[in-house]
Length: 129
Image (cartoon, rainbow, N blue to C red; front, side):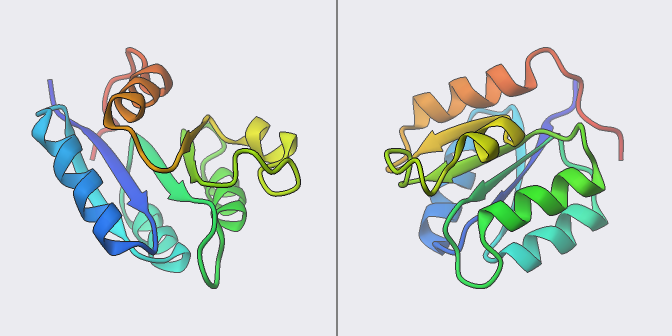
């Protein structure tokens, strides 16, 4: 069985790279990173990913805009948000939570991240290249 492909979009490069390393160590995932919303959308448009994880608050194109653009490109593609704003109902609204397939709270707990990824992807086979 081939590895599931995940795209992580976050302007915090260290967080992106550590998350990538931790996920790839499981042997289940092939992870690509992008450090801005625009870069992430370009990569998502250029390749097939089983899951996109995007930070909510980023300069330029934020997570809400990335989420909406990704869902417009591929309505059924799973998208999960990273957010430190989970306690602020004005930021990560019910509407956004409904569109997203999951929300992971920062600071990121690797076990929680793996559970959310597993729940979102379930038994889904990796997307063919």
